[in-house]
Amino acid sequence: MKRVLVVGGSQSGQLDRILDRIVAPLGADGAVSVDRWQLDGFERFPFPWGFWAFLDAFPESVQQDAPPLRSVPPLADDYDLIVLGYQVWFLSPSLPVTAFLDHPAARRLLAGKPVVAVVACRNMWMGAWQKLRARLEVIGARVVDHVVLVDQGPTLATFITTPRWLLTGRRDPMWGMPAAGVSDAQIAGAGRFGEALRLALRDDCERGSSPLLAGLGTVTVEPRLALSERAGARAFGVWSRIVRVVGKAGQRRRRPVLLLFLTYLVLAIVTIVPLSLALQSLLAPLLRKRFERIRAEFEAPSGSGTERIQSHV
Image 1 (tube, helix red, strand yellow):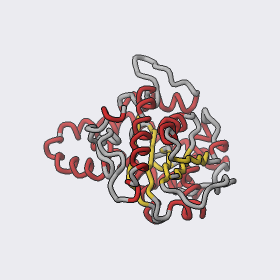
Image 2: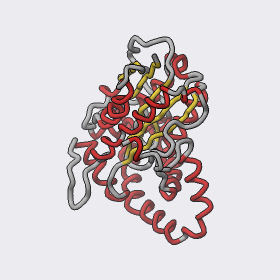
Image 3: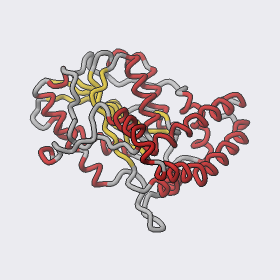
Image 4: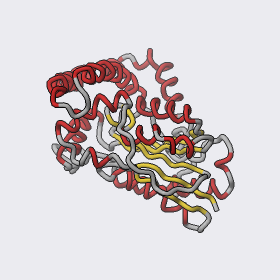
């Protein structure tokens, strides 16, 4: 019997729903045993977020300085495949996922093992993926696939709908904009990844080096967002270091600097981001080769092809 470990968790439950859909087909024929590690740490950041709790998570998220995990569930000594679900906080992996990767258990479980990473987020996930992939490579994990499910709304609309969801818990449509988060249809469709993994495990494909989910519409890259994201990541790095100099996580004396950061962030969203996207549209012919390189880098390893979707619906 093959053994699969599913690691992850989320505040809103969105990522949990996606992982549930992926896991569901695995045990269909009784040939796969699935263990679930529901990461702790999310209880420190209640959902909906409090205003100050949200801002105060920014510096440590960017610097990948997470509070340690409090517990590790009883697990098998060895797994054939690891499915790792993660969120994006401030263009970085969420703190509970960072804490997991810092834990000795992660190194023991992931070293030499094939890993399928799964992210559900707004739409700027590329910087977080670079950080996560680098940490997985240091551990010695073999990243065979990366599943990316993003918010259904237009980029500029999500700057309104996502904060509203995070801070109030309301994700319903508003002002002509779609509901926040990954759509129900996308979540339901995630079952195709589980079915493909079930067949791959049956045929021992996880022992090879090829992606298991190629051809299933696993990831779609918008290169224009990558350039905006990189600029944001540089600024986030500077601001996060400044806030940490002022005080430690949870200290009230960080709040004035966090408000300055929030002011910068809002101004950047309403000015720099739209201008950047507009300029990139105008200069698209000149940026074509650069966009192609970005697309190739971030579509790896699974690719954006959809030729196998119909056979896994």
